[in-house]
Amino acid sequence: MKGALKTIVVVLMLLAAVIVAYRMTRPASDAGEAARQKREPVRTGSVAEGPIREEVPLTGEVKAVAEVALAPKVSGRLMQLAADEGADVKQGQLVAVLDKDVFQAQLDHAQAALLVAKANVNAAEVRKENSGRDYQRVEALAKQGTSTAAALDDAEAAFKVAAAGVDVAKATQSQAEAVVELAQIALREATLLAPFDAVVSKKLLDVGAYVSAGQAVVSLVAVDQVKVIAGVGERYLADLAPGRTIAKVTVDALAGEEFSGTLYRVSPTIEPETRTAEAEVRIANEERRLKSGMYARVTLVTKEKPIAILMPSDALLGSEGGYYAHVVKDGRASRAAVEVGLRSAQEVEVLKGLSPGETVVTSGEGNLYDGAAVAVEGEKGQ
Image (cartoon, rainbow, N blue to C red; front, side):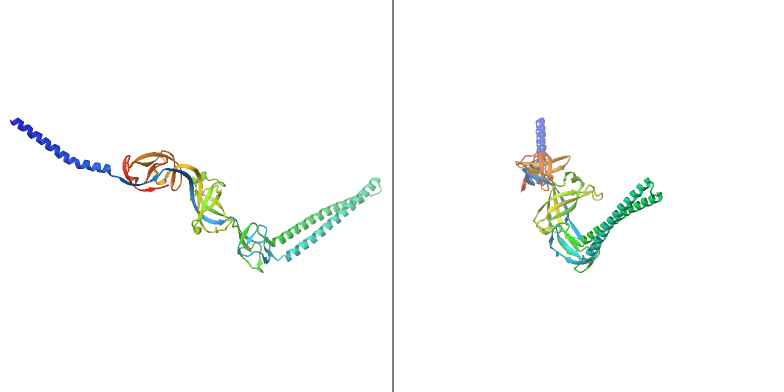
C-alpha cells in the first residue's frame, strides 16, 4: 500500500514538472513563431528589358571655339570701322581700315626705285657686253703681236669690272624688289579682314584714333560652335574616343533643354594633383543660344546597349567580389547572386542571375534573410 502511494506521488510530481516546464517554454516558442511570422517592410522594383547607356558626368564653362582681338601689324590712324558690335562677319570680310595714304606713297616710292634698279641692271649688262667685245679684240691683236700685254691686261680688268657691275646692279634690284614687297605688305596690313566667320563682340577703338602696331581694334568671336573644357577622371579615359563619343549638354540658364555634342579631344597628359585629363567637347550652336561663360553640365556616353536586362541600381548589393539582390516571390525574399554589366544612375545591366519580370528589393533589405516574409510598401518602377 505504501509502495503504491509512493508511486502515485512520484507520478504526480513528474506531471507537475512537465506542466511547469511546458508553461515556461511556451511563451518563448510563441515569441519565436511570432518573429517568424513578422513581415519586413520593403520597397521593390521590377527586372525588365530596355536600353541602357553608361555615362560620365562633367562640369565646365561654355567658351567660344575661336576668339581673337584683331590688330594691325602697322601703325596709322583708324579711318573706317566696317562692322558694328554684334554684327556678323564672314571670313575675309572687311572689318577696319587705317589711313592708307602714307603706305601708298611708300609703295609708289619703292616701285619707282625698283624701276631705277632695273634700268641700272640693263646699263650694267650693256657695259659688260661692250667691255667683253673690247677684251676679245685686244686679245686677238695680242696673239697677232700687234697689241701690248699692258693693253690686254687693261681690257681684261675692264671686263671684270663691268661683270661685277652687273652683279651689283642685280643685287640692288633684289633689294628694291624686297622694299616693294614690304611696302605692299604694309599697305595690305592697313586693311583688317575677318580671319574666320564670327561676330564682332566688342569695339575697342573709335574712328580717328591713332593705332599702334599690335594694338587691338575689335574683338571677334566665333559663335556657331562652342566648346566646354572639363577634367575627366583617369579611370574613364580608356572608354573615350574623340570624334565618336557622344556628349549631352545642359546649362542652368536654359533649364529643361539638352544640346548634343561630340568629344573633340582628350589631353595626352594627366594632372598629378587631380588625376584628371583635360577633355574638350564641341557643341553646334547655330541658333546661338549657348553663350560664352555659361555654366554647363556635360554627360559623356561611353557605352550603350539598345536592349538589355535591367534592374534598379538600388537593388544591387555587395561589391566586385560578389554582387547579389533580394528577389521577392510569394511574399518572401530570397538572395540571388548576380553578374552585372553597364551601369547608369538609375539602372544596372544584369548579365546573369535574374530574369525579366522578377521583383527585387530596392529598400528595407537590412533585416532580410533567405525566406524572410516581406510586406511591400511601394513599387519602384523602371
